[in-house]
Length: 307
Image 1 (tube, helix red, strand yellow):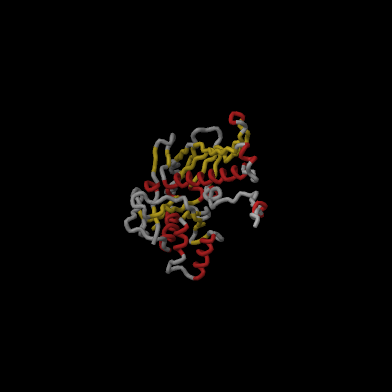
Image 2 (cartoon, helix red, strand yellow):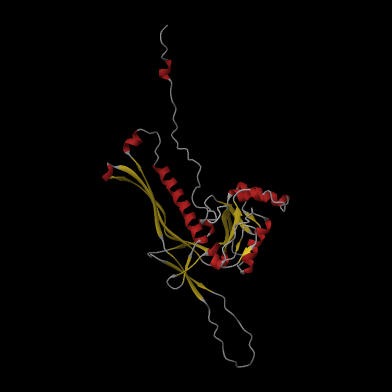
């Protein structure tokens, strides 16, 4: 019996499209903070103006008072970020796909995620204050936060994590109260960055009624974003408490309380490299910084990582 050779004619089908693996597409934080342009500067400064007092006039022709107003200044230094990929001309001859444009888009996504990291670091880390930005303040030094058990930490006191719990309705309401206690303009949008686990855990709150449940369920699914005075969104880029590693460092802010300084928005170039045998180079870069403008508009809330 002759040997069958029909399998020689079998065809393998390959797709001409790239399948993009799961990843955060760009920045989640940038649309939720104040964005400022920086032009030809290695350092950026934003001036602030404090509260002014008034007094009662007690007599005719009394001296005119001089109520000095408090000026302040915050500083951030733009830093450069880039990423690069090569596509050899020999590679392109062996592929159905033309990957260069997809490379550029994925690089833009990567730099978008970097923007989020820059903003998170500015929100929870040190802020430079003063004429030259020589004084530095940690968040806990100028802002009240929510301890893991829902109590409020005093300014200058690190949030406690020993009794950390998951998110509760009282925690949400206390967070909103912190902004109101500071007289933050209620017309300024307020945002709350949480972990996916925290949003899911909110569905199990005993205090949540049927209408609240539907709202939170929609939050988890990403269909709506507003509840208890905040625009909520989830992110996987939040860090954990360094002391115990049992709590997510989640936080809320008024939109103008965080500034993203843009010296150079994300740019991409696709060029041949004569020095590398005309390999195609896909190069993307940006120059960014961020700063927390005041503790009154940024508040941290520690929430348990797991049940």
